Amino acid sequence: MTGLPGSLSIALSLVGSIWLVGVVALLIDAPGELVAATFVFGVLAGFVEWRAGKVKH
Image 1 (tube, one colour):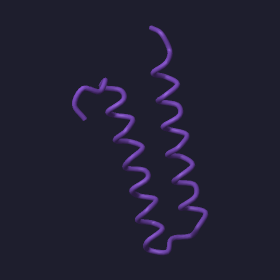
Image 2 (cartoon, one colour):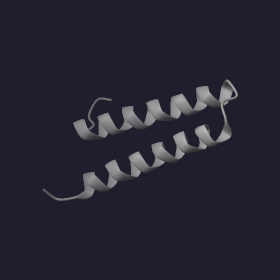
Image 3 (cartoon, helix red, strand yellow):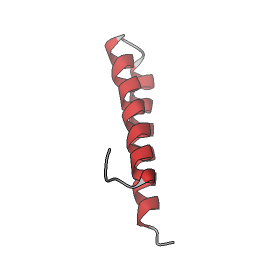
């Protein structure tokens, strides 16, 4: 992820890995609540990182 700020690279990696876990859980027929919770957590983590990046230091 060349050219991206460090915090954005970390956030993208975190959210991407959470979504990957959700997709794998979906593929192995994990309970729907677990899959939905994984996706919601990923979206919320991405939103928090995005908002944190907009704060002026």
